[in-house]
Structure formats: structure tokens, C-alpha cells
Length: 325
Image (tube, rainbow, N blue to C red; front, side):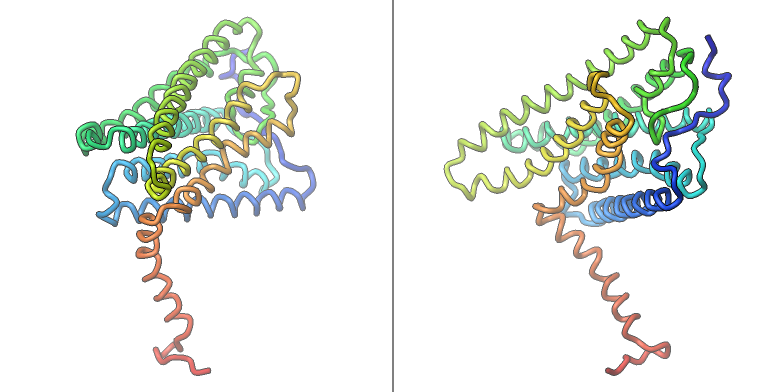
């Protein structure tokens, strides 16, 4: 039995062995990362700068974009660096930091998605009490609760994981420090602690999942009672993006963490990890802005001056005169 602190580095899973595929992986992840940074950054600035969007729904969306930026920035840059420099190693301190921040941002995002389900429930099922139940003070407290709960859960998870002794080597079959891959390296004597760790996480996750499901059952019952099709359009337009984000996030994460060992394979584990840790931060802004006219207008007002300035600079000569065709 060897303690994990005696290991100085952990080799991560390489996407490919050939240089061409390593560079392809680098450019693909770079494109996804830049798309996530740009789209989430635009949403954060647009909501922060537009007073019409100072509502609970958009405040929670701003926090969701912050969690998305944090989660993808925890895993993707290190993976890109490893591919570019043909390296696989991550240090012991880097492993601890990556595990802590990844669990923190993922748990915070899940808590926030649960709060956003409650926001939609109150807005549709109890609209007369919306100002009372989700006032500015309550909104701040809920967002702070999501950040605080994620911090506490991440601390407990990281401390418990790093207290396990490792007996199965130090090679992680994943492109980042994923909890199930770390638990595979732990000793069999730590079975009860591993089971307790997984049970604790599963209980919290299932509780949030059950709350989201019950909220949407009530929401759909209320919406379907609206007689006109036009009256049902607006509630659906605000709920469907959130439901799509929740479905993608929960389904891929649950499959990655709860799939039976008989169907586990390095390739499948890699695909599932990419689907729940890399893809959602890049897709969430697109999903939320696709059917949201207010957010589209805010983004358009934010981006239009920059586009106009860029076009003016592009079609102007150095001395300021316009280029003639």
C-alpha cells in the first residue's frame, strides 16, 4: 500500500499517438474553448450592462455562464497544452487543484440549474407571488447558496478523495482528473470510504434531480391548462432551453458516473467526459439565446457598436478617408 502523496505526477490519457492527431485534438479543443469563452463572455457582459435584464432568471443565467467558464477552463487548457507539447503528466498539486475546481464548478452548475427550475416554477405556477418569493434579496441568497454549497461539496469531495491510498499505479485513463478514474486507483481496503463518497454524491444529485422533475411536472400541468396556443408559447420558450441544458448535462454525467463496469471502455469514458465537461459550456449560451428575444436584443446592442467600428476600420484608409471601389 502506498499513499497518494508519495506520487509526484499522474500521466493523463492521450487522445492520440501520432503528431497529426495530437495537433487535430489541440485545434479542435481550442475552437471549442474559444467559442465557450466568447459566447459566455458576451452573455455575462450583456446581462450586466442591460438594466432590462436585471431579473432573477437572467441573474441566474449570468451565474451559470460563470460556472461554465470555470468548468471548461479547468480541464481544456491543460489537455491542449499536453497535446501541443506531447506531454501527458500532471503534477500532484495540479491534480488536486484540477479535481477541486472541476468538482466545484460542476456542482455549482448543477445547484444553479436546480434553482433555475424553481424560478421557472414560481414564474409560471405562482406568478402573483413571484416578487415575494424571488425578490432581489432572495435571488442573491439563492445564488450565494449555489456557490457556497458547491464550495463545501468540493472541499469534502477533494479531501476525502485525496485521503485514499493508491495501490493501482498512477495512470489516469482520462484527459483530466476525473473522480471515477481516481477511485479506480485506490486500494480495495478503502471500499467503504469509496462507497460512502459515491453514495453521498449520488444522494445530493438525486435530490436535485427529483426536485427538477417535480418542478417541471407542475410547470407542464399549468402550461397545458392555458387555453390559447399563443399563451402557451412564452412559458414554453423560457422553459425548453433550461430543460434542454438540464437534460444534456444530467444524462451524460449520470451515464459517465453510473454506467456498469461491463460496458466501460477507455473510448466510451473519453466520449462521455467530453460530452458532459466540454460540450455544455460551449452549447449553453446558444441554447439559451436561440428562443430568447430579450437576450438576443441585449447581445445585439452590445455587439453592434463593435461590428460597426470594425467595418469602419476595415473599409477606411490609414489617413481616415474611405476606400473607393
